[in-house]
Image (cartoon, rainbow, N blue to C red; front, side):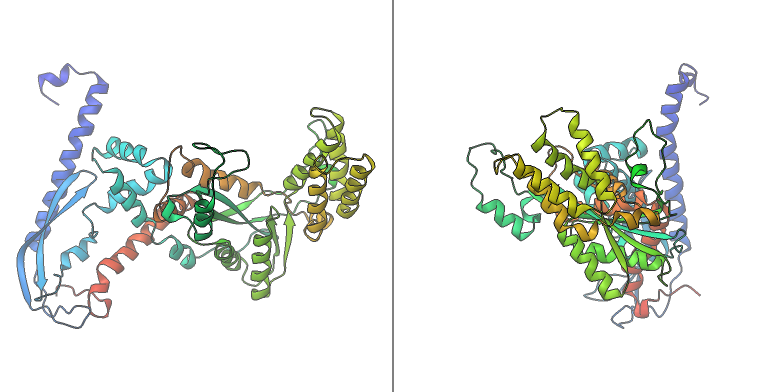
Length: 473
């Protein structure tokens, strides 16, 4: 900085120069510290590996490379040897060195950036932030390794008990475009059996059969806010009654596990929050029968009372579909018709609404094709009536919309996994989902500490007798 050339630079150029130069300075400091450790390393007698075999042959000068966020350094250490067996290095355990060449610092960068944007963007971000070039494939592998302990982290962490009176469970699914080998067998077979009508493109109603369903679950608590049906459907000109707000939201997601397994995880989290079942448990769904069956099965197995409520927004979508059987597109009367029937459903009259829709379709003499939307709506209301107990929900102050889980599907899955042209491997998709969940839950720093402890156990402690790493006297 005292050189004449430095005085000819503006502050931006000075910043850039120092940013690059500081990495080399820190790399040298890192290397010097590692060299000092190597000089001070003492021999330890009585080292025994996990098979119970003693390691009596000790050699100096064993070298390995380590790529760090500052650049590459070398690690010299003692090797505890046995013929035909892999060497043990006590210094590796002390430093918690990874199995691969890339440091935990680069793995952390890979975990964050790969879960944020595409792998190409991740490699570029890592190079901008650290000056280190990590290949696209390597970033994917490091991200997969980084996500290895997410499930264990949430299974073991301490969870604050439910702070509200209502504990809400919610689940939904979102498709991810996968590589052919990563599809579930049924989807793969459907894709193989399909014979498109047109060459090079799909016709209306045809599907490619290239997606695998990711299941997303949410648990949160709310303070009850009792409302009336008119409060729910209040217009912007009416006095607004704000619905219950989600607190302490927790998300989980998986493309490897099916809906039953994810729902079991959701119940596990709810159980941790309310172990004595003092809260009112409410499950919000979109009407998917398999999800409802899984929730009821979990509730029965665990002997927990869970009230299932179908999202009002999905009901409104069915009503609007029915409305266009009776009104022309854009007819203002359709909105009033939908509102009247939505109010009736909120008042507990779903069966009567379904019957009325069928009667009107018959009275107007609609053809089967023209009344398809009306019949679908009536059938939906009739089949799901047990889960449309909105009077109880509103009186109890429960939420009746799945906005939380719908938003999670967009944020956790669509915003990252639906990148144009992306075709996901099973392990890659699962890792990114897990990492996005951890970051969305605000648990990444705590998770990373947990992950490094688990890495130490796997990579180092497991190689010694009784999982105990000997120390110098």
